[in-house]
Image (cartoon, rainbow, N blue to C red; front, side, top):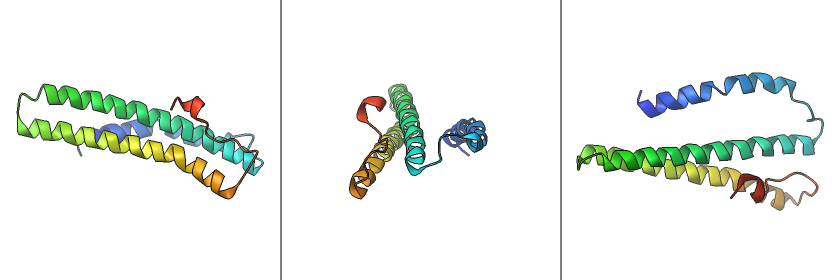
Length: 120
């Protein structure tokens, strides 16, 4: 198992208390309440994913610069940059899909993910 996989597993293990507390969630007695909770989670997940992807790009750039021309190190750094960009694209889709679905369904009066809350 490589270092990135190990770091991802460790990072996700920190989210288990949040999942355990999910049983006590209040305010989800209706569909708009559920949609609001899902939107809050998506906003948080998108923000975290963008921050992590940015950190990985910085780390990859550092590896690229300190690779000293070693083709193996440069390939690893380029792969990290590609996967960080993939993570940003996934985060962008996670942010956009609820908006598209809500506008397609024509639902009004439910909380949507607004662009000012996430800073995009």
